[in-house]
Length: 171
Image (cartoon, rainbow, N blue to C red):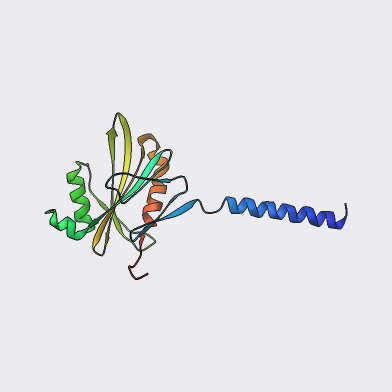
């Protein structure tokens, strides 16, 4: 084989490897809604759900965010002074068993979370619900999947929950 042929083969292999590595790049997408950013797996596709600020579905689960202004929460008659209080109010209002726990994340956005199971239309689902306190608003971020798949997805759910950041209004 000639030297130029070997170089051509080497270049071709290099280009193929680079294109393969690029295609296998970041497996997450950054979702921006209002002043929140969250990273979700690329398998999630945008959808709509009444009363959800944002809603994404995947073949095995959902992720959604609900933004509530603190003024609206106060006007509703709820006495809520923290993400912990808001989580407890959500738990009571939705008859969810359990208690909220505090989670610190690498993004410096602490949040409160709780896990539960619920049967919907005869199918068992598992949920991870996270509550964030940001300036003049509370955010609820729900992750859910089929109950039998929860152990496989729990790490991904927490990874997404930990990725939440809030954008300053002047940015």
